[in-house]
Length: 209
Image (cartoon, rainbow, N blue to C red; front, side):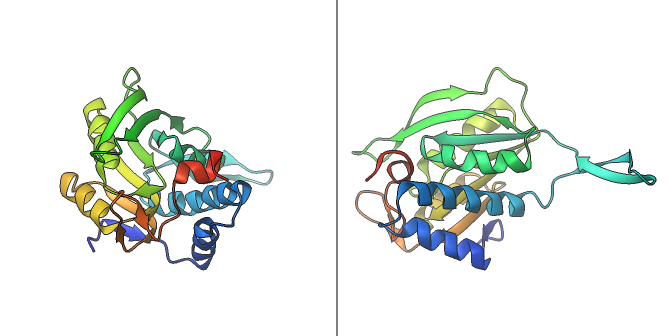
C-alpha cells in the first residue's frame, strides 16, 4: 500500500471499529464510537501541522510555548461525515467547518453534488475531508477536486472504512492527498457497499433501526 495511506493500529481504534461494525449496536453507540475514532484519526493526521512559538506567563515564570501555525478546515461529506466533526472540534475549536453534499446515483454509482458551502471564503491552509466510507472513491475524488479548485493548499482524507478500489481511485487521481483510515476492508459488493464494512453510515448514525 502507498506510504500516503495510514491505517490506525491502536487497540482502542480496533475496539471502536468492532462496535461500529456490530449490527446490534444502537445509534447512540455507533455515534459515540465514530466520534472517538475520528479524534484518533485527526490526532494522527495532524502530526505535521506547522507550529508558531509564543511566550506565555505561568503563575511562576515566563516560558516559551507553541500554537498551531496554520488555518484548518473540516469538510464533512453530508450526511454521514457530520458524525466525525464534533469530537475534532473539541480538540481544535478554531477550525472552520464547511459542508459538501454528495449522494451516489444508485444506478451509475457516480457521485452527484447537491450542496456546497465554502467557495466564498478565503481558502484555509489545510483541509480535512471527513467521510466514514471510502467505497468507490468517487465522492472523495469530487470533494478533493472541488477543494483544490477553491484554493486549499493541502488536503487530507479521514475515513473509518475503505475498500481497496476506493483507495486506488483516490490515490491515482490525487497523488498528494494523504489518506487516514480506521480499516481497509475486503472489497465492494455489486451495490458499491464496503464488505464487511458497517452498512450505510448515514442510516447507522441518524435514521437506521
